[in-house]
Amino acid sequence: MNYYEEIIGRNQTNFISMFNQKWQEEISSHKLPYSQDSQIMSGNRLRPIILAWGYYANTSHIDHEFILDFAICIELIHKASILLDDLIDNDNARHGLSTFHIEYSKSEAVLYAIFLIDRSLEIIYKIDSIHNTHYTSILISVINNMAKGGIKEICSTKFFSMQDVTDIINLETTSLIENSYILGYQLSSTPMNKMPEEIYNIAHLCGYCFQVLNDIEPFSSPEINKEYKGSVNFDVERKRKNIVISYLYGACTKSERMKLESTTDFLYIHSLISKHKIINLIMEDIRFKMNYIKTNLTLFKKANSSYYFDFSHFLDDMFNICF
Image 1 (cartoon, rainbow, N blue to C red):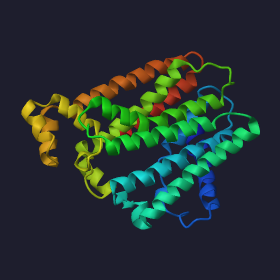
Image 2: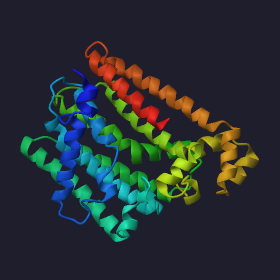
Image 3: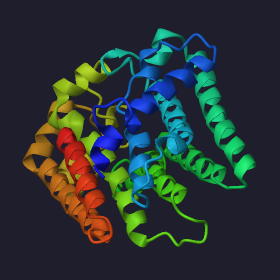
């Protein structure tokens, strides 16, 4: 079986094609004035795709239809988080287009985000009620973590603390990607099956690495970041976490730290990042973690070599896009 083609290939019967069709139907069914909004309809679908990879890690039986509703639930939560994140950060653009709260209003952004979260829980709760399963608890846990992470980021003053920033990343961003893979895997397992530790490791590190690479973008590609968000958005100037700053603070001299604590001068911060080779340091850590993902993937090498090679191929493609 060619898992890569079945999940994200070019034919109309693969998972991502079926998902996009189902997503369009889902958003239209809301009967709200946002069915053509670019922020809602567009996206890389990373989290639903990760869920599909989790599902096929444990089965070779093609059944995209079975996992579509779960994938929709994951994407609904992701879209809600985007609306709230853009509103809180007061971003004017995403993907080079006006953000939801700019195109409509701040009130609509909050209310629609609540609606999307509620709709996600409604879908999965209905599945649980029919089949006597307990998948709703996974989504509740994810929403709980994301909310806690967001509150911690807004209230925190410890933007130079590696531990605090890592905690926020794990709660706010990693949690959804991690649980997408875990939920997918659980969907193809019997309730009595014990989850292999390798599955948790793969799921967690995928989420963490994608977020750290996202944090690097304003410093490694400010022109892309400006086009994407309307202005160079390096977080610390708005009292938001960015792991690049945490790495930098640890590498700075005492006098550099004092200035870093009080400045939002992008050029100065960028000069320190270059001086201390922070991007190279972070990339080295990311490559180490990617290799560890591959080590955990050897769980499948003998049992299902096609999955092992195809999922490795997918991860290489995704991380290369980020690089």
